[in-house]
Length: 239
Image (cartoon, rainbow, N blue to C red; front, top):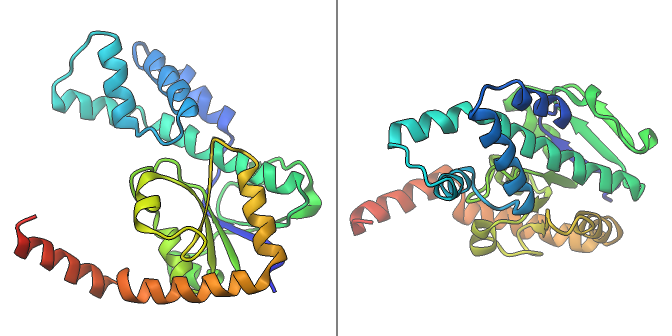
């Protein structure tokens, strides 16, 4: 019977990451502040698209190599967005008295709304993370910087019969069946993560059905063997 939500990943205080932005030279600092505003306004906006839009508004052009250099230098934006939304999702769950287990580096920096609902564990090496996931029933994924794809945490949950709750994006809506292979929540609608978690915790049979369906889906479509077959097919078709 599911009793808590597992989250595996790293964390740093968003305000600490924002300090890195504030210490950056111009025009980098102004660009990063604007990109953070844009991506908080639209959580599914990729960094590349946001920066291209920003340059267009400024009536500026950059050659591809310079564009790539700016993207690399503006990594603090991705880090801020990642941890901002991780904190927001966890705060929402904990305020609803939903127990969470946090596994990974940096969680001692996280100040929760209710410590009685929080268990912190040190990070484990990648090879042991699957064993940890397999012992749980529900796995939270928050990866807004993967907004045109899927974090490997999603497939790890599916492969280990653990229901994945994840923030939605166009790729997941196109490739996955919400409520059958995983459960999607919205970063824009803050309470949706709580609603999804409560439904799974209060409905063990639904949780079990998703676990089994997701595992079968993983075996049929998402193993390395299946990926290789898909790649070969694309090559043969000249895609």
